[in-house]
Image 1 (cartoon, rainbow, N blue to C red):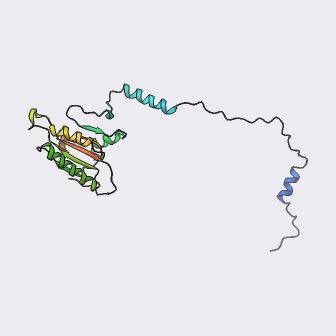
Image 2: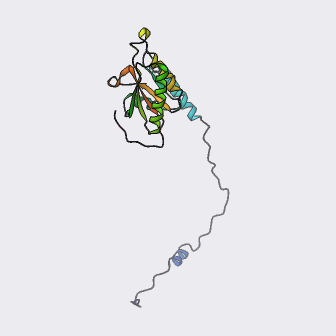
Image 3: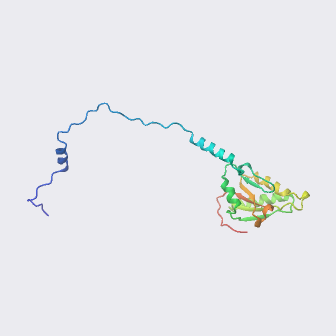
Length: 193
């Protein structure tokens, strides 16, 4: 298709710009002000937030779990450095108990050996949550739960134990403990027992 010779040619954009800027002189670079950005004052924001949290905790009636709360018969443990949410979820039963062992009525040495074997097997299977039934101590002298206290001490010595708490009433109540284990590389389906 050829151009129509009767139509005038459109001027080039560069020519139009030159024509518009004809007679314009550039400004002289005199007394320019360079604005400096002001640095914010150093405010220890994290320290202030920590202090506010400590103040709120000190005024609250809630007992912090990090203290190693064990009131009365209830066993509660949370490994230092873990969130209290872990223990809350364990208490509420959000972790499915994948295996259980019944130690009640046993003497402490055989019970400890059986508990160690049970925990090692649970870890090798990749289980995260198990239940240990230790009994309430009704048949022991003074009706005190001897095995329960010893088991709590044994569990705290193991690095694989993240947290434990009293089992819900339907799973043994104060006669059983739900234990949360460290995750391992082996993944297993969640089983109910």
